[in-house]
Length: 176
Image (cartoon, rainbow, N blue to C red):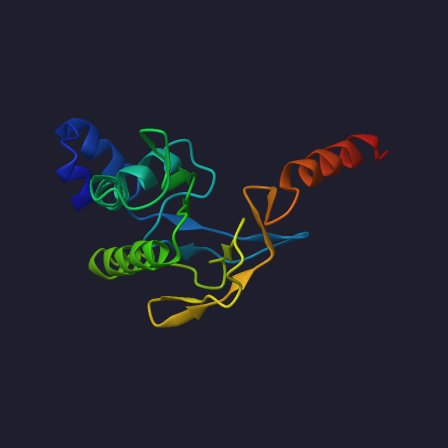
């Protein structure tokens, strides 16, 4: 909620959001079984209409720090070094040492804001490079590069990514 205060959200809207997220409970449905209720202490509602917007407000300081320090990838004069969608952040850089700086900033931000980074979901795909022996560190954990990963339902790889994704979509449409 502190980040929302820093974003100059009108007090009545802030109160409404706080009300929506106070005393939240949830259940998990798996196959045909439904779990007992449990309290939700942090985070945003999975699939909630406001969730993506609240997440982006929550990490706005991180995104601004990366952009203002010009750390990460630029397309011409447009900064695209930290792309967000829902609760995902994709960090883009053409320089291995710069990527480490971006990871350090993200790790520090996570520590300062009690923000959980799912290290098992954290992947680095190196593209268009001959350097293959790189590794990075995020919050003390070594992140080895991988040849591919799925991000937001799309395959991200260091080879023929667009062709592979188009072929996958065509296969899905042709499957009865």
